[in-house]
Length: 250
Ligand SMILES: NC(=O)c1ccc[n+]([C@@H]2O[C@H](COP(=O)([O-])OP(=O)(O)OC[C@H]3O[C@@H](n4cnc5c(N)ncnc54)[C@H](O)[C@@H]3O)[C@@H](O)[C@H]2O)c1
Image (tube, rainbow, N blue to C red; front, side, top):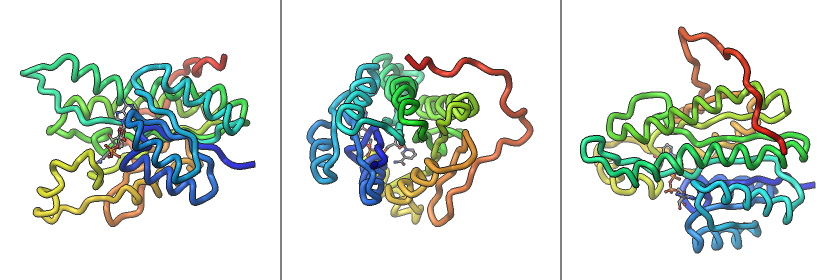
């Protein structure tokens, strides 16, 4: 029986690299992206399933999970990766843009976890990896709202780690530095001219795959150029506190 993965933001960059990497290893992939042409093209290349939809709507994740069940009968790995940069100026505020960034980067992850849990459980457990960012651990003054969203998903992952592990679902996150994808295309020349090393999407894909199989729930993998991914360690703050019901399973 093949392993089945759902990847969001799969048409480009890190998500596409994860889809290619998993597919090469024999994993059946369900690809979700707003870019219909791109996601269809990659799905055909990988002989996978695809859905063109917006992760900031709850239906997108529900439909993608339904597609995984209908096509492959199970779900084992979920990569909640779709994301956009903020560029929201707090002084010259664009409310629609703000809602869009929060919708994709935060709501998309919450909806993805909720939608995938029932099928992961019916499949006997599995793993969820969220693409956060170094900006999920440190202050990126260049984009405060993006930084907020990436910190938020780190908090979600940490708080869900133990309750989901108790149900045999591991959740973790990758926190990559700047990666050479269309997301940073505008700044690419500046990085190159400054001799600033960029990660490749394939570097991050390798870290995502290792995060799927991390033994420790809630692992946040820092990914930087020229170094092995390393789990982030919080210092001086207490470990998990209290308990909340995990997402409903119905
Ligand atoms: N590139 C970097 O430097 C970098 C660094 C750290 C983290 N990240 C994170 O990595 C993830 C992937 O980014 P990338 O660099 O591969 O960028 P990318 O732009 O190459 O790919 C993002 C994909 O997400 C899709 N997408 C955007 N909004 C969507 C929505 N509402 N619904 C469905 N799909 C949507 C896009 O169509 C695109 O295919 C993002 O969460 C990003 O924040 C990127």
